[in-house]
Image 1 (cartoon, rainbow, N blue to C red):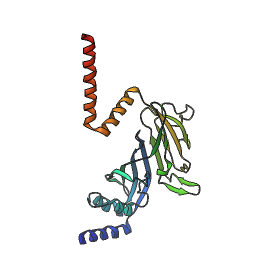
Image 2 (image 1 turned 60 degrees about the vertical axis):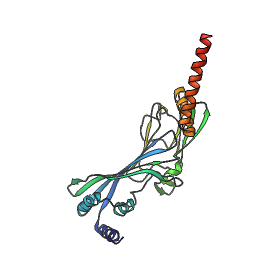
Image 3 (image 1 turned 90 degrees about the horizontal axis):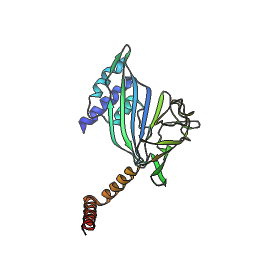
Image 4 (image 1 turned 90 degrees about the vertical axis):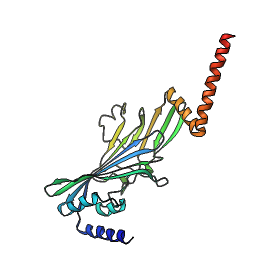
Length: 250
């Protein structure tokens, strides 16, 4: 315990003259049909000459926690998509390699994680699923009118395969042609710095094919019954074949 305390003291003391500036934040949210989302966040960080050596040594240190890196980089190093009721899972953190520049260096810091219940879903008709984005998962800065994208930030949302958007607000900054074409065949949307998120709305529909419905039905049975489900299905198939053969030879 004494060794850890000493190391932490040296780490925090070394930050007194450190200079890290987050120049850009890119948050990509890939939505899944099970209402979860895979999130990848990339922070572009500018590092002063006085901190280049420290960053290189901290990058290879195995016992630095996320909170340790937050004390170095600042409050911008935070998960911007999070469900307070479920937290995150499969969290991965990667401080990228240093690229030397004239007055210091730069690096990309990458976080990836999975968040549950990013969307809600209903089934208004067979094989048609209506999804609504849950804006309470946003964890960006707050302005006078509510939550907004901070300076030099980009939010990207990727819809599930085959999804068709029904409504979105605010209007995405990219693709710029999407609005005129009612976002037909568009699966990824981006919002840039200053966009308000307090009244964010995103609704889309996914229509499953018959094969997907059957597969989903079988998967649900397997999750409930395990291997027994396959045994029951095999018995049903064998019984059907035997009955057909009996009728044909009778």
